[in-house]
Image (tube, helix red, strand yellow):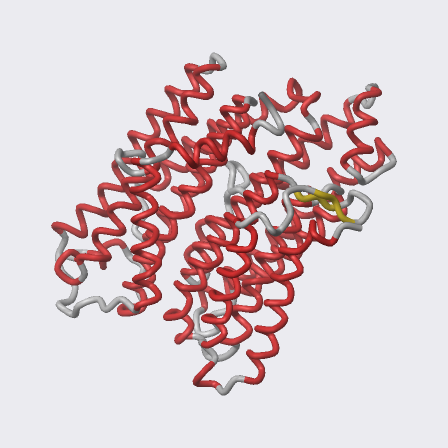
Length: 475
């Protein structure tokens, strides 16, 4: 057993346990110190991973767990998202009645679940990671006990995630019944022998449905708007970035490494999911009055765009997915940090409350504008490069009509993004009180905006990195 393959997970687990203990020992007025410990610890682990000292490849526990370029890439993405979310949370946790210390520990256990999912080389290990992430998010979603919306969101999330997990687990059990093994390698060998019949197609459909819930693909998106609105804003940001990225990471591994021979059986399903998700997400976002609900439907639409990479089923397509997921984390972090800044002052998430924001906080206005324009795909923001890369990958494979649908819906999305910008610049000012942005939140906003612009202007190194990661699956 090569423990170097699980070094990152061990460090994150230890950090989470340390925070759990310090959360109990720290006096009530100093619970926020746990957040600073978490940020410093994760920055150290991220630096360790990026330095290459964490190991480049290897397996653990007789091949049930693997470290490769794909899992390493996504683990670093997860850590970046977690650091941004923790920084957002430092000012937000003041509204919690209790549990401020445990909050950061549970957030790290959600991060650990994502890491286990992406490195799993076995269906059981995959499910354990999925449940660790999901249970942690259920707790975090309902963490604000003073908010009825938060409690309601937690109940909805636990019920709907239980249903999706049941569907997914049933699909995985069919895989086991057909092959007699839960290991990816053994299942691949069984597939090569052929003759698995219609039961395999049923299993694939159920697995896609289960992960369709995690990535908020239509028609499995019903949970997103209510839970995004009710959950604490930093947790909404983590759901929209980390949880969604984990779902796509597993889909990439399953469809391109385990089930590539079944491409003809699931390609039509992926195309249908992508089209429905792009259209429904963008159209229903238009009438939304609450910015978190609007961003929820926007997130649904972006899941559809990312699915285009799986439609292409090429190295270029997968590389485009990886690039888009990376830059989407920064755009979302900037948007939700701006929402958090206003929410800390007013307690409201309504779009109309952003009226005249440019007078109250030029920083919030600029950051939210950059984030929204990036999501709309307007240059020089990174979202433009990401969408261009995705659309080019499917056009190259002959899906011109699908690219036209995606481009058309991107134009539609510009309407509701610009609507928020218009309110900030020309809307009625609700209050003359300046929006004070705490230093931790300001850090998230500046870093997110700078990364969004920089990766749009100078995308070369990141696209080279994502292309090299994608090349391990497809050419």
